Amino acid sequence: AQELADTSLRLSDAPLVAALPLSSQILDPVRCSVVCVHANALLQYAKWVIGNGSKLGLPVVRCKNKFAVTDASEYDGYRDLMLSVLFTGREGLSIIGEIQLHVDSMYPVK
Image 1 (tube, rainbow, N blue to C red):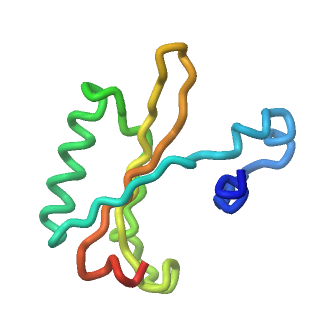
Image 2 (tube, one colour; image 1 turned 90 degrees about the horizontal axis):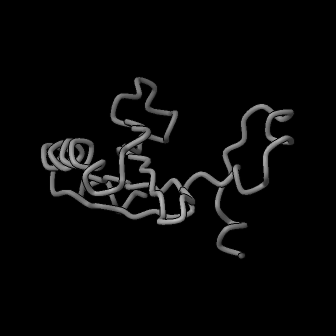
Image 3 (cartoon, rainbow, N blue to C red; image 1 turned 180 degrees about the horizontal axis):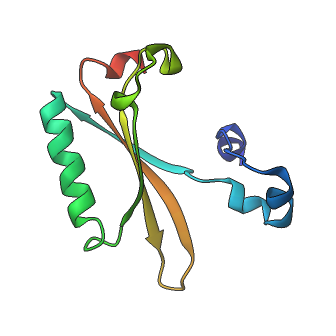
């Protein structure tokens, strides 16, 4: 429970949030990091996950590319690529997980 409490919640419009269950505010309590040796390997892995995610039961529903940010101060110069994937269990319950893709040289900065 404390781990979930420490997870940063991403909230949008307050009236909409108030109408939804509290659990709808937690977007990615399940995450993993993949560290690639260079940017080309990161791009190849991202393309593979995006192309094969649905077949694996983890379709990509969002891609956040921090390499494409033009203002370096927005993330303190840090860069990565985040893929949000949707997992749906046998009973229809779904959860969003996150795959964070890092370049080896930047990972220690995280």
